Image (cartoon, rainbow over all chains, first blue to last red; front, side, top):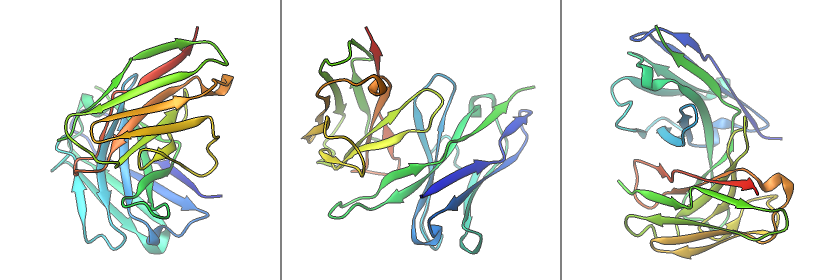
Length: 123
Length: 108
């Protein structure tokens, strides 16, 4: 069974930093592009960042550009999100999601998602 | 940035009823649209991709239709486990990848 599991969440003060990890099992993560998506309490989904298999292409949402850095270690089957200069509005559950290509589909879609890790930014 | 608007925000229905959820894009996304289901305390799950194709393991009561700017997710007969929040997502013009605000399907 393909599974992703995030870790590294917790309570952090405004201006602080955290590094989230996402580890895969039942899949070779090096074969897939990956994403980070977050969900503030009681709110909808917000895509944050995307990275290709060899890290040659990386995208960020404007809301985190310059503060967050996505990276991966294919040897460890892992994905990371370094979050700096955290703000109250960064409080959310953070999900990693695989880009999966269904046969005949032009684009990839988020499948599966990890269960998420909660980040709380508060003084 | 493509904005996706979902309606209604909340849909109150009984088990066995038909659910029709709408997603409207601010500009054409062709058929590059997906639907996800999220139950309380769980991660989202892919239901439909390419506007109308069911993901692996998704029951046939879920169907998607539409292209361009108007899309519909239909649940033909609601099962108890279908009461959840549903999000649409586009991949026609990105970054950024964008989601709709969600439709909550609740028990009437």
